[in-house]
Length: 487
Image 1 (cartoon, one colour):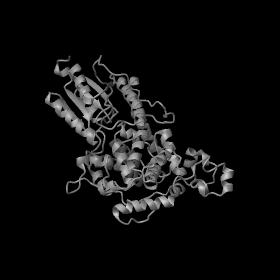
Image 2: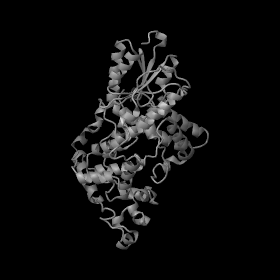
Image 3: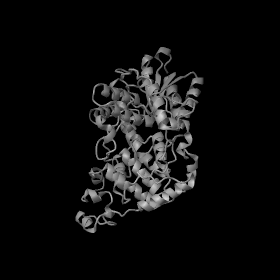
Image 4: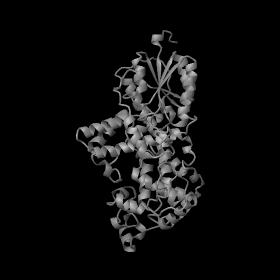
């Protein structure tokens, strides 16, 4: 065991901060001049929700990338599987480490667990330091004048932007001193890659810090300049595709905003486009702050009256939704894109979520659970907040009676049919006029396009008009007479 205090190693506990640059915990550890023990613990089963299959796929690749980066610096990632506190203690006992550095997580269970572990280790002489390496600000930094959490997004965003700390210059270390002969699991033994079935063949992603940096560069070069418009067109590459990289901490949100502002200063995009993108990063932040301050959101409606929503049990409808065979091409395209790529365009996410909770009256928790398992960017706060927003039960969900019409949404945002034709080839040959509502096409048009409703492509599993009236009646039972606005 190491005895000399100057030679005692410091432990860096990686979680959702899988990067070397702009990493406050790693930077603080490096500045001590001591040997560093980079550790990742797969805490399953643990107190938190078990990771979904798509998340495990991403984690496998991201940990391999982080290990490779550390090895280029002379280090290497130590992998352990089991209870986090037990594995931390085991490594401390094995090496004599007397300091633990971590970037805090703010999901309620993780936040509480971190505090409990830190307090326990502090009592035993192990110094624990926590940093914010995952959010723009700590949740307590953005409160109303009355000292309460914001429940509406626009004033939250207005209060957030002025208090975001400047990003300190923390380049990735070029050299890391570490200890040899420290036992580590082999990531191949963890079996994180999906099996039975392996449905990841279409996952076109580059997990890791380098992949995150490349994604940001590509967005700044091509996507930011017309982001406000292109972000809503699922047939275009108009979004940043940074969400999984941000979730796993392969890039800092502050770095993203800093580089976006830099692009504006260089004349590569207008301030209006940058502000629109910054608002999306702000919505991610809003979700994280809400969950931290209202932990019941994962299980119950944020607005208590919605706990009485008369949800339906519809096994067949849920299965059709998951498998992309609802008979509504835009909905089916989104669900098939999700299953194939581990991701879905944001505009389409709203449409498919609305279809589940409003058209089928299926509990939003069913959809949230499916997204949790199949999205590579499955983030607890964002997932829960977004599903509750669509369901009308979340923060800032006005108008709560919002019901997306999948036909209108398709005609408006996929007017050339590029998105639907890619993911729903059964209707590819239909003219644009009939593409988003095949059941309304004349028999001759269907025949010429090779579409046989109920055989080659399903008829709608629910009539939009009837489903809309049923949803409005259910909502009326909770909160009085809703308007009939349609989107």
